Image (cartoon, rainbow, N blue to C red; front, side):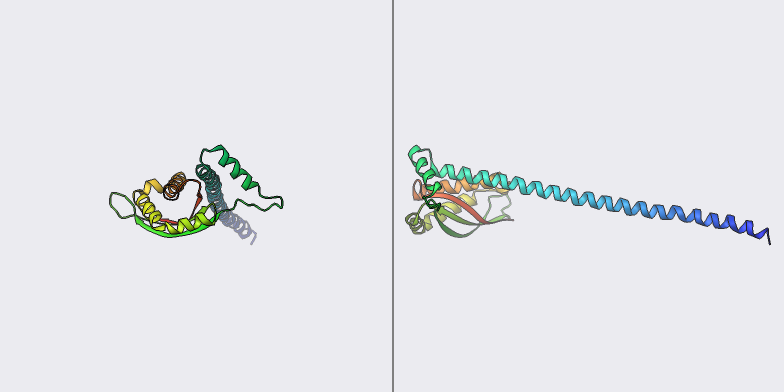
Length: 195
C-alpha cells in the first residue's frame, strides 16, 4: 500500500497544474473585456462632451453675431440697444422683444439628385408689438423670400453648425429686406430636419 500513495500524489499535482492555467485565462479574458468596455465608455463620453461643448460655443457666437447684424453699424442705435438691455431701475429688462412663430417650411434641397429635403421651423424676435404686427402682415412676402433662400441650399450648405449659423444670418438679412432696418433682432431655429 505504501507504493500506491506516492503514485496518487503526482497525479493530483498534475490535475491541479492543468486547472490553474484555465482559471488564469478566464481572468485575463474578463479583465481585457472590462478594459475594452471601460475605454469605449470613456471614449464615447469624451466625444459627446466635446460635441456638446463646441455646440454651445458655436451657438453662443451665432446669437451674438446675429444680434450685431440686426443692430447695424449706427452708433446712436447701438447705444439705445445697450440701454434697453440694462433695464430700468427695478432690474427688469425692458429690451425684450416680441416673438413671432413662423410655421415650418418643407422644401426640397438643391442637391443634384433632388432626393433630400429640409424641414425648418423658426421663431423670430422683433423689436416691439408694431414690428410683430408688420411681420404678420407681410408674412406672404417673408415666406416667399425664405422659401427661395432655403430651396437654393444643398445638404453640404446646411450640414455643419457654422453653416446653420450662417443660415440664421441670411434669414435675418432677408427679413430685414422685407420689414426694414432695426425690426428683426434675432432668429431662433426651433426645428430642423435634413434628410
